[in-house]
Image (cartoon, rainbow, N blue to C red; front, side, top):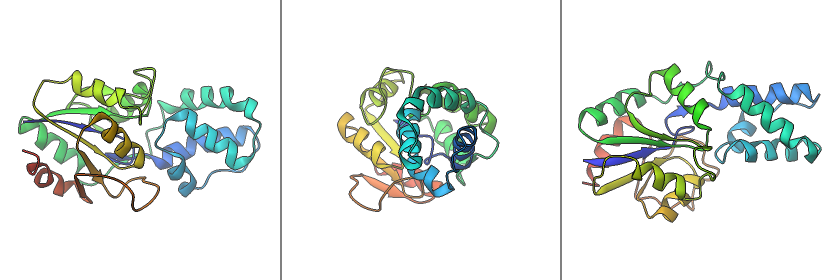
Length: 214
């Protein structure tokens, strides 16, 4: 059986509309124009501070607003679950993998409390043995330490697999020396230049993809 660690946003769930809502609430308070959904998707993937940096740059805001914006973003994040949806087949696939004896973990740049909140809201928390968020350690992906920590805290098996959707995930897996499986329908910025062992576009395909790692 394998240890399989998943990314969250853009891999298991499409949370861009909720994240866009947080961003636009903050921008409204600052009397700045809102983000489009496509902007929100492009800004995601590397944690709240980087998202806020991109907001500031895109709206030419004062850099001194950054601490206030990050604090406000984090305050709103845990309750931002209503517009988030799992990708088709995610729940069924996760439960099937767990039933088959695989050990499942999560490694995300979303802070741990909001990650747990959205998983509970969607009924997806139970299959995971470990959840490592963007604030669980003092660093975030693509630093390999969070991914290594996730694997280290799970039951020991020889096979390790990381499933994600972005350039950040691919780099993290490479630096952690873990095989990377790409979900192609997430938030990646481009269409090439990513090293992966396998790729899939529907979660119904994932169990068969993983058989190649046995």
